[in-house]
Amino acid sequence: MKVARLLICSLSLLLLLGCQSLREQMLAANYPPAFVDGFEDGCSSGRSAAGPLGQFDKDVPRYMAEPLYARGWEDGFRQCEDVQRIDDWRARRVERWHNDEWRHHVDQIMAKAQRR
Image (cartoon, rainbow, N blue to C red; front, top):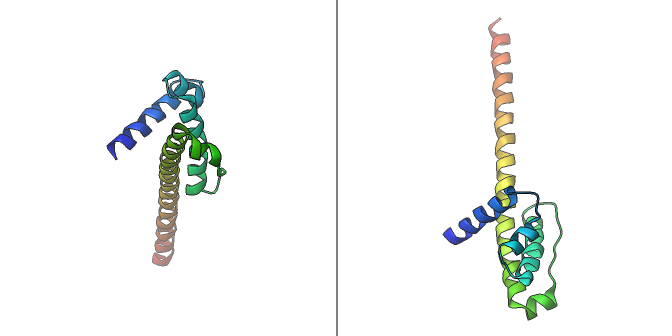
């Protein structure tokens, strides 16, 4: 679990470092091209599995024949699915907070109206 968190943090940091695409950053960090291809496909699929957007991408013949592609796909899927779930959870939490604030405001107005 610590390794996955470290990898997620590392990839998030890579995204923040500049205008290079994640692919370019991973290749510059000496990830094998087959792994990067699999990671991109798995990441897209992971976002799709966790949320309503994206698409399921998996080059099945390549997945079966190339261990690096398969490993990249699995890593990308898990990491991006987790990130999508966390993003969705945060969005729901913010929405819930706004709803609670609105309800509190309405309750205060109703209480004032009833006191009169």
